[in-house]
Length: 358
Image (cartoon, rainbow, N blue to C red; front, side):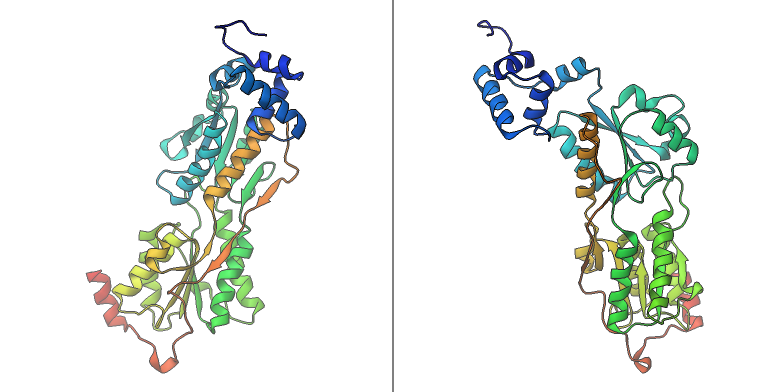
């Protein structure tokens, strides 16, 4: 029993409820592997004694930093921001802080060699990064929970959508509408980013068309680095051709926005002259009326955070790859292809003029 005026500690709660301090911690944090009877007994003891868990004290007693490092390839990405918000909501609720490591700021060379993460973090969440074989080895050598949000990385846990499934949803939607002239604007190499996502979406676009007996033309694939300005430039080049496609599958919504802007500048009506579909369901997609394949990066970030926190408590996820949900969202940018005689054409001379005035 604690004396009047003394601060109640986790040991007091453990003695009162007849369990270990580790069990008290797990019970009060709502973690698994605690029976409901024990959880109720611990909660009752904590309420009776007026015990309030202290995140800082827990960190000192465990020798942990009570922080998780979130490694991103560059700033300003919608996907990264959403994942961060989802992870941070879980971490803060459990008394952990999240700190950002931006590879675009020159941190990559010192990320592991100077033990940046070891000095500050208990776990690592990485967002769509093209870890080299050496970096994967060094990350494992940190001996802390680590997970990737995005495409699977060999030897590491991951959370993300199945990019083949997402691509199939997009391409099948266009095919089912009657399109056979379907281009793809995607992304290939960009500093720090895992290009696996872009390659899987590109290869799946080709495979899905061929599986349905439709030609996948190499000249109808253009790379735009997952960025709206580059996608706009690529789309203008594509749509100024005399044999332009009737539909564009963009590898991300941000690139789809670029396609929509280019089509408007060229006098093409969407979806009457051109159908456009993306992947993500970006925060701006509804405003653009964009048909897309939705994913929930906030939920992916929250799942990643829960997995590394569980591992810090000795509970290891059975699945190495956690597949997040994705679904088709129909809006205003897709429709049946135009009749051949009704297509709006941009002549080569008009294209040159538009390129100079755009």
